[in-house]
Length: 213
Image 1: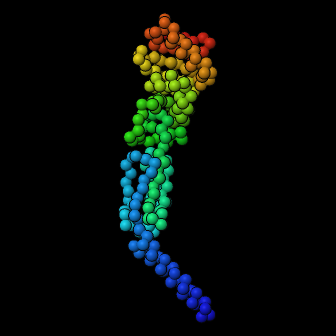
Image 2 (image 1 turned 90 degrees about the vertical axis):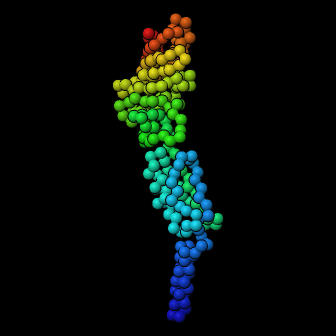
Image 3 (image 1 turned 60 degrees about the vertical axis):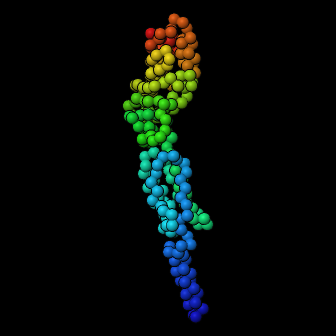
């Protein structure tokens, strides 16, 4: 019985000592804070000298994930050197839809500090249609995609591209996302013909019988 009491007393003492060391002692405190994965401003609620045991990784990560442009956040503590690391994974924009950027999952967010010139502006009846349109855009040859200013989705999955180049603006009626390689080849061949120097509209929805205006 005495031995059992001694074991319990030692266990309680160890628990109390550990709790004091972790929660109150100056041995385990935040020595540095590192933010990785973003150049955007994020508020830092953790302070140097704060007790490491009082840094709640999940709670802090959850606060960062409330920012619309943050896809995920991971917070970790190094008990040896006292460093707290905050790793942010940003959402990757694939297009501009309804004046917001959207990612591949259809989440909309405000862009901060990122260039949008390479992103297509999509006009579509729904975010699902916009995602499909963005996937279609990424499959276009770079010679065409770099000229796209607006990508419109009409009647299901038919596409109309508004292009802008040194020669001016041009409307490219693509139709459905099928025979894309052939359509791109036909379109580029049409542009090379001298009589088509001032084209304003090209319809390659039926690539074997294209229409130019």
